[in-house]
Image 1 (tube, rainbow, N blue to C red):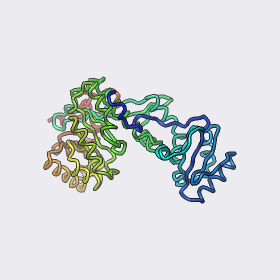
Image 2 (image 1 turned 30 degrees about the horizontal axis):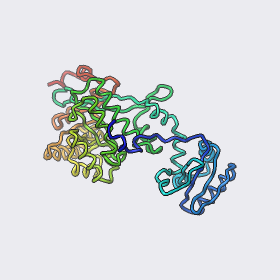
Image 3 (image 1 turned 135 degrees about the vertical axis):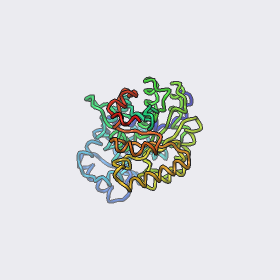
Image 4 (image 1 turned 30 degrees about the vertical axis):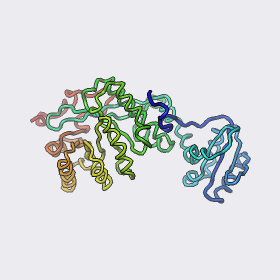
Length: 367
């Protein structure tokens, strides 16, 4: 792809625990932890040497070294997170740039635990399930949300929460998020969804610089001849967003290329209101916890109507997500333009058509 030299390396590389001989460098926050590590390493048969603040160990098999430390169960989670570890070739020396490659020992442990997950992304065993977003009045399909699934060694589906939890633990969030965006665009095109809105989740913390991290996604959309206005990039983890300026930069980059932007989980706290005010997205998805049993809960109704008022005043499209009952649908349908939920369809590897969406609904939903 064009511009490959400008690609973010964290978006492109999958880390691994190599089995060959390595020179291992370790840094400790306090002398007590260094003393403990040296004692444990000695008991495991490894000889430590010191070079100023660095502890150095030459190991014949780096993967076995990490497994030996892991199996020893000597280090608590905070300790293993504080110990910094880097493996270099035996001929290499530690220098300033080495700091950018160093990882907490906990990350190496997580990579050991998550070998099947790393195989999934290394072998691209990822697939998309489609969840329809529906016009609340006509029940026509407006678009589809693309939901990622992994495929385990046994052929079972691995849910997205598991994938992204392991991605954070193994420092592969950048790679996974980029791959998911690209697979979503390609699969939507293959399924003939170019004339629908295609909702694609993205995690803001997985993007350093939009121009570097998002260029492959932009390129894939061009290659698939998808109208940019039909791609809706959906901000997830709104509760965790701390750098609104950075997120605004990402959103501006998407919009400069013609894409739409949606905010997920609206109404779950002050953080999402702050993001709404600063981003002014094209759409918001009202969180399923507000929608659940809303017809019977006056507090949820008040919160819901407050969100509706803000969106109407700022001309933002509203999606009520997580609808599971007809009572929920009947309450929200006159307030929002779009609805989504198991009442209409579950996520499926084949996009549901409109007949499938409404086939189990009672006739009174169609007036």
